Length: 178
Image (cartoon, rainbow, N blue to C red; front, side, top):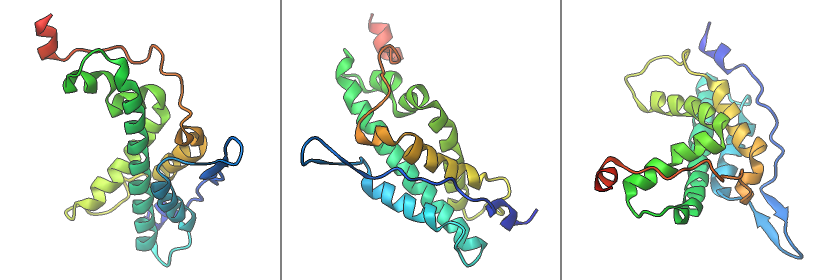
């Protein structure tokens, strides 16, 4: 299989909007709008590149911008959950409501798809790596689609109910104090 074969797919359409009508004259703007705009411009440009390197570069931009928006969303949720914890210990907070834990429990498919973006970014950031056949480029686009289309409401602040999903976990040091 040539490199081009890994780039021959059509990403699913993303028609979720970045702005919505709010109450009265208000307009709601999606969270991480800069990352969203960057990701979606590259997403929609895929398949229109002059060669495989340009398509791979487009996938790289999609991966970076989607990961960035994902991270911002997880930080926002983390900030909302932090007051529910009874500790100020950073290690306990990370063990209880770390970004990866939030992603895993509230957005499990997003967690799995994010790995494709991570692999692409880390692979292309290392000049010693050769070839891209082991990368799932289509998975990067599925990750973008899943965040911006299937979880569009989350970017407007509507997240799945976290009740009972985040029990407080004590780090080793804090457990030893009990």
